Amino acid sequence: MSYCFEIKGLDLFYGEFQALKNINMNIEEGGITAYIGPSGCGKSTLIKTLNRMNDLIEGCKITGEIKLFGEDIYGNMDVNVLRKRVGMVFQKPNPFPMSVYDNIAFGPRTHGTRSKAQLNQIVEESLQKAAIWDEVKDRLHKSALGLSGGQQQRLCIARALAVNPEVLLLDEPTSALDPISTGKIEELLLTLKEKYSIIIVTHNMQQATRISDNTAFFLLGEVIEYGKTEDLFAMPKDKRTEDYITGRFG
Amino acid sequence: MAAITWIGAILTIGILLYIIGFILIKGLPHLKPSLFALEYNSENVSMLPAIITTIIMTIIALIIAVPLGVCAAIYLVEYAKRGNKAVTLIRMTTETLSGIPSIVYGLFGLLFFVTYLGWGYSVLAGAFTMSIMILPLIIRSSEEALRAVPDSFREGSFGLGAGKLRTVAKIVLPTATPGILSGIILAVGRIVGETAALIYTAGTVAQIPVSPMQSARTLAVHMYALSSEGLHTNEAYATAVVLLIVVILINLASTKLAGRFGGKAQG
Image (tube, rainbow over all chains, first blue to last red; front, side, top):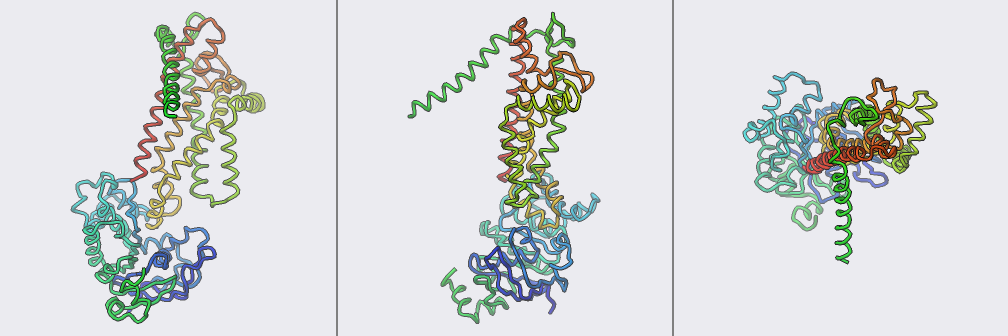
């Protein structure tokens, strides 16, 4: 079994507040890993640590070790290279206020792809991978803001795929979407897990059981339980996990 | 209470309409094609040289102030850390600068550009003085426009591995452009309407300036000169009509851009 991320002894502070406490976790390469837990439990904080988006927050201090395929991401790694390798999709769809085409091409252009033919190919492939090509192929040069919320989120997934990442982080990607759009995105993730390692933060336990292979349950900045999704939901080892998944709190 | 606010509203609009009507009635009959002759002389007080001077003055002042002001705003919004002392200082300075009466800028321009640097009464001295005068306006409107860009755009860009510079240049700045432009247009309005500071620095020569080192008068100064000389009051009113139309057009353009920006930022 090989791991995409190996996290060792990770502590994270926002000023005085400790948001993550001694996280140790190896994340399997390939497949979908779900992070569940009540609001403020640190699951989104952890996912943002994996591509160093927390660097942008003032007063955020991190100790411990995170390795991406054996390389320390807080060591010598260029943060822009890290974010190219570890793509991210956010809670609220955030397409740029530009055309569908330019949205997808932004990443490849950032990383030096200039050739028109190459860009055309990347745009089409990425949109196809994100299962939105048929819906937007006739309006590639119109503003992405005219798409529906679900389409915008799939566009954002396509945009993340366009830089050819190894890992895809999704921070509650369906929480702002209707059930039909949510279903489409879940289907999409199930096809994408063949090629990418996926980590998804979700509020929705049904979503975790439907799509994930492994699940981690967070509470107050700690990982309470982490294992195969079917085991965690069928036979939770920890009382707190059981209370949470049976809906006694959260 | 309702009656008072109603009266207030009617009075405000009434005064505005009265001023516009007054200027149009007094000025329109005297707006003759001869007022747009290339040459100004004491028989035909043409305003065309003043219009051309206004355009030149505005362009030079914008070339100086816009890059400076927009860069300062980018620093304040994108680069400076929160609670940074320099930021507080810059913000305090711009606020103070924007409250200074324009004649003080004129006096400064006279002492510094005209006298100390030895530029004499010139378009260049006037344009530099104008650029200092509009700088706070440009900084503040650009700052607001940049702040209105949602952080989710920045996150999206960083998340794709784009650096700070690329994020600012390709995502933040284009999104903020309409807001920045509307601030620039307001600044143009201030230059077009300025007199005091320009009389001190650019002088009142009524010919088309051939070089920026020559003295020249803008449209507002031209109008002031005509009415204060007392010989061409009718032509002064005609000039006022042109000035009024220009300022109204400028404000319309600014409002339209700002509206477009507001709609865009919500997307």
